[in-house]
Image: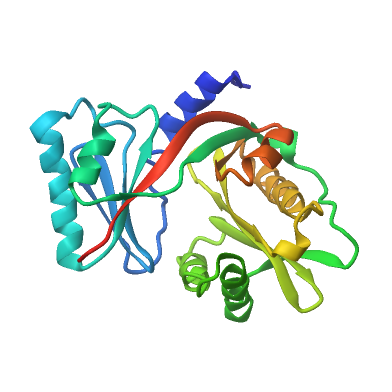
Length: 266
C-alpha cells in the first residue's frame, strides 16, 4: 500500500488521472493533443482540455496555446472547459484564461480516500432503496431530479450518461439512484478509470426534502463497494462545499483545489 498523506495522494492524482484517456469513449468524441494538452471534443455537453502539467509553457507561448484551443472549439461552435488546479503553474494562468474570454466557475476541492476505508453496506432511511440503472427511462428520471435540485432542465445528464453506457465499456461506469416510491431522490455515478488506481465519484444531487438523512453517504458507500469489487485502490471526488464535509467525515483527504474555466462560443 502506498503512503496516504495528502502530498503523495496529490502526486498520484496528478500522475494517474489528470491526463488519463479512457480506453472507450462515447461515439462522436474526438481526442487530440496539442503540446502538453489532451483535448476532448464532441461530448453531448461540449469538450475540455486536460494535462498533467504545462511542461514549462509560459508567456506568449502559453497565450498561443490557449488561443489555439479557443480557435479549435470556436470553429466547432462548442463550449469547453479548462480545469485549473490550485497548484498549476504559471501563477498567472487564471489571468491569461480570463483575458482569452473564459469564465471562472465555483471552486471545488479534490478529495481522495482509500477504497477499503469507505466501502461498506449502505444504510438508507426507511422507504428508500438504492438501485443501479441503465435504461433510458431511468436516466431521464435523473434529469427530472437534477432539474428539481438546480432549477434548470437537468443539463442533459440522461443523454450524457446514456452515451457513456453505450460506449462499449460496461465496466467503465455505474449509475445509482436512491428512490422513495416512484421518486428519484438522489442520483450518483462512478467512473472506473481503467489502467489507474482510481475510481471517481460524480453526481450526488439530493432533493432538498431528503437531505440530512444519510442518502448521499449511502451512495458513496455503495459506489465504493463497487470499486472494491473491481480492485480499485483509491476514490477521488471533485467535492463541492456541500459534499466536502460529508466526505471528510468518511475519511477523504483534501489534496488540491480546482476551478473550472469555461469558454463559450459567442
